[in-house]
Length: 85
Image (cartoon, rainbow, N blue to C red):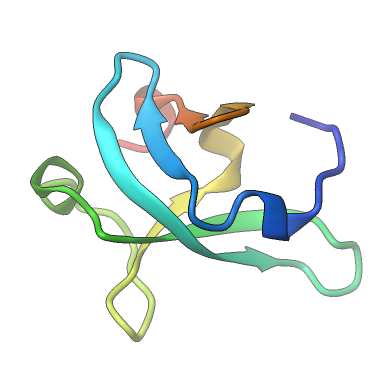
């Protein structure tokens, strides 16, 4: 996903794996301020499946998904599970 998108367009979208497992919803994005490169997506309303994975969390307890795992963006944010775990 090298295409530039407005971060507000992905806030609140569901994050799912390629196989359809739901992770949660996008609550925030973390990016490099100098380059604008998107680094991570913070999730809210996470599912038990996502909670069971040993993923990095914010100080507020939101689960972080590396943007490098994002494979598609549309009605949902689709991530490659193998890139995360």
